[in-house]
Image (cartoon, rainbow, N blue to C red; front, side, top):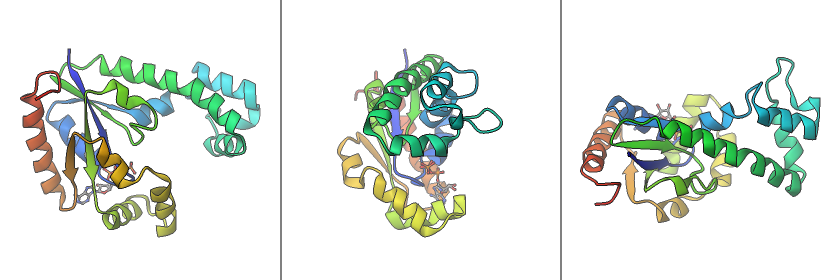
Length: 201
Ligand code: ATP
């Protein structure tokens, strides 16, 4: 049975870029953000529960969840936020587990910006943190999303701090050079991971 590597890092640190290269090397990859969106798709039970509790105003005209409306709603109440987390976390966890179970590679990767905060770290045997100097996180995110600096700074501030993330890293990928460097680092780590038994040296 494949062991699970957690891959995390701050906004614009290069998680997706690193994951894409692991994927190109044949490693099975599951994206926690993707699972989190999937469980609230129209027709999924969680969306009906959200509408039951908070009303039809949680829906966009096309029937999709109105994320901004939901955020606004739970922002005002700790209880509602907890209710939502208790609804979604187990469903997201199940979705992730189901997808990880499809892996046929020697190890599989769970990419998650909130690996620790969400409790998803418990599913992993080992954690790789993509560590990127803040000025590069800012620069790359602004370029990728075409958003103003202030908006990226606000997200950086709200996320777990760099030191905090590095505390639970088993491995660190420093993404401070070009993409060719990132890919070489991924290849080096991949060789190392293939040499492990169940994620342990
Ligand atoms: P988020 O959590 O915000 O989704 P992320 O950690 O997945 O971000 P990526 O989307 O992989 O980050 O990277 C952010 C942007 O920076 C992307 O446009 C990516 O192509 C670019 N990028 C990543 N690493 C490098 C690098 N070493 N050199 C140049 N550009 C890079």
